[in-house]
Image 1 (cartoon, rainbow, N blue to C red):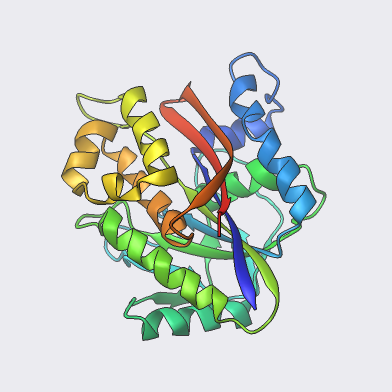
Image 2 (spheres, rainbow, N blue to C red):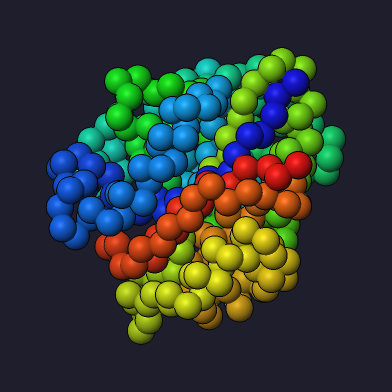
Length: 280
């Protein structure tokens, strides 16, 4: 059967994509940030997962403010990216697995998760930047993908607890797939940042570190906070951390921490990297 072998986390800010395109990984400003991904890249190359579920938020490439589904997933065999206006060069298409995606979608629906299914789906920097961070050193993308979009833009938003529950349903969906497949799930976004208003530029390192530690061994601490409470500490865009709860819900209660890294600021964001594997 298919199995989730690891959960990863990462920021996905567009400035990272531009830094990669400009070859700035060893630049003094960027080096420590990019170095934080090297152990994860090495591990991924050793275990060679078959598919990555990338949990991210669409930034207007597919869904604009007039119609934003709470949860949407790709059900296609290929996903293209497109120009978002950030100047990030377009990347080669990402391979999907429509049969696997439809199985996951049907299982989620049967578990009470009302999904929007997309047979055509463009992927933006929320998806492409994490893929680059973990696999850009390959000539071709070495994993199939399943884009899983969560609305963290247009209020009302879903909650961290609901995201955790959706992650639990995702685990059941994956493990009910009859074919052998090694799956990793990536929770993207965050950590603390705010792009506008009087608190523009906000970064709360103490809260970011607490969130990282919560994801590891006490997810209840984070998912029992309301969205208002999270945004008071992490900023309006910091609400993206709820997508880490989808990843955490897809893992068992006990996990092994193979890698943990935090760096701030990078652009206007606190950035955290985790590599977690099931302990059971």
